[in-house]
Amino acid sequence: MKIKLNGETVEVLNDSTVSAFAEQVKLDKNKVVIELNGQLLRKTLWDSSVLKDGDSIVAVVFVGGG
Image (cartoon, rainbow, N blue to C red; front, side, top):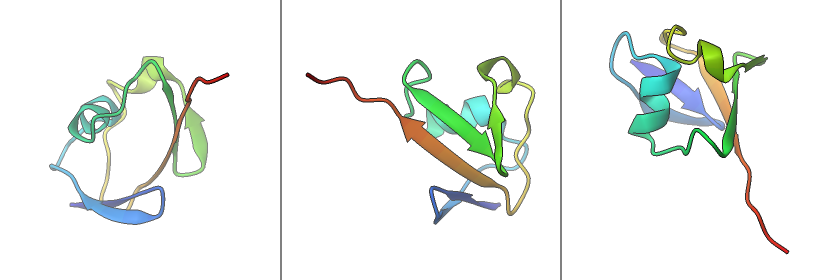
């Protein structure tokens, strides 16, 4: 199935959770915030949130610096 990640279409396996998708695209769970369909998604819900065709994810990765 297809979803949008930061505006770009990507393929994901059917019944993928947000957590599995984050691993698939190599997002560091400790350094990313995910918005699913316009709603900020708590990390405690990543394992139980199943993606559907056409969903939209915005992933914001925190980068340290100084």
